[in-house]
Length: 323
Ligand code: PEP
Ligand code: MG
Image (tube, rainbow, N blue to C red):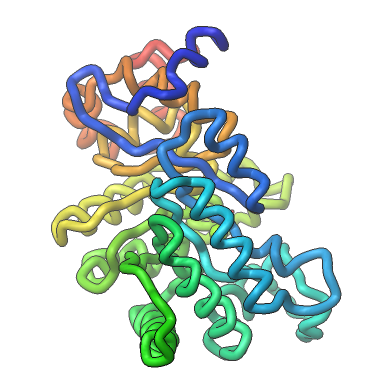
């Protein structure tokens, strides 16, 4: 099987009925790009920039960040690279920020919430990204967006920094600006967000935990962590439909995007980009090439009207001959 997959490294991901989907990979550091290319990913769907800030005693400088972003963009040679701005908080702490302990860190002061308040830190990252934009195909994405106002503020700050650089004669390339959909409020109002973003990337790791109110790290409630719960699938469908109505694209960068049972469902819901760990890319490509998008799409209403995750999983496994 591995040998069969390795023949697919340089092939595009086209379904049996001729539709192209983008298979991308998630990375945490510039070193991860090797694995991305070795496994034939068509882009990077999530660059988690947190790691630049972690395991050290002070914030990374603009120059350090610029070099990291430039390196990734250059190594990807024009393939799309979605860089997520700092998503710290929750399970990822930065001791040197000396933030007070919280009762509910996952519901607390994290990610874009923190960046909108600690603006010097945020603006430094944005400048590094903007300066790196000329080295490849950059897309900028904000994490943990709950309200339109947060997205507008984040985008306004980004455009302010861009304007300052342009005024100073620094070259900045065109780039798309999108958001993670990982908070249920954003998934519900996706039609409104879709008018203002260039793209969505669905973060199911968090979207599931927030929708089911079940901590993704807590084993005792792991039975509630259900990617195939129809409530989750309807939210995902809502996000994809909303994006397409506005002519935008929708991807997924949560773990679910690489799961064998999820792939036919997501293809049928019309997902445009699947981003996963690099080691899953070839298996996913092999699976997608054998699937018909039309057939997968014809099952949409049936799946979305099911009652339980178990029912969905059993149906998909049987229909697509998954062990
Ligand atoms: C997600 O929430 O699905 C996601 C991709 O982000 P992270 O796992 O970094 O929270
Ligand atoms: Mg997340």
